[in-house]
Length: 157
Image 1 (tube, rainbow, N blue to C red):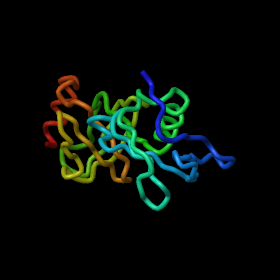
Image 2: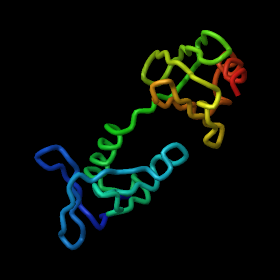
Image 3: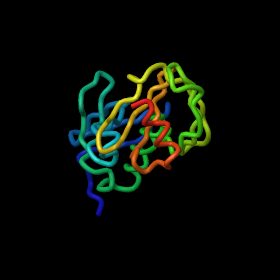
Image 4: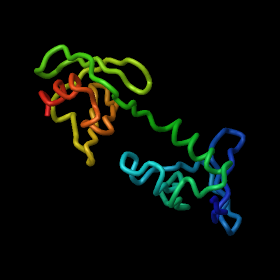
């Protein structure tokens, strides 16, 4: 069941998000920011001004009217790039740096892991892996990986 929020969102002529608050004040270049991007990506989204102030809070994305939800989701998708690793196919060596070949939700990829410290546990069995270029790869639940992938991963943890 969608509710009418205390704000309206639209795109301006430059494609930026514009928020109109309940007093009728317009804020341009609004940026949605997830509070818990991995654990609860659909809950707790702040709409931030260009100077970093919270203009509005979205408790649950599904509660927004469809048009508003689509604007927020499109803006988040354009800002967030975090491929999700589905399988680890190969590593060049079990010492670091090593080149990893993986299957992700966006296709096959290779990246260089500089050190074991670039693999972080983020709760609930999830792992975040930063490659040598600063791109973050997500393993949502390491226990759901296939046996081959888990064996490789265990050598680095």
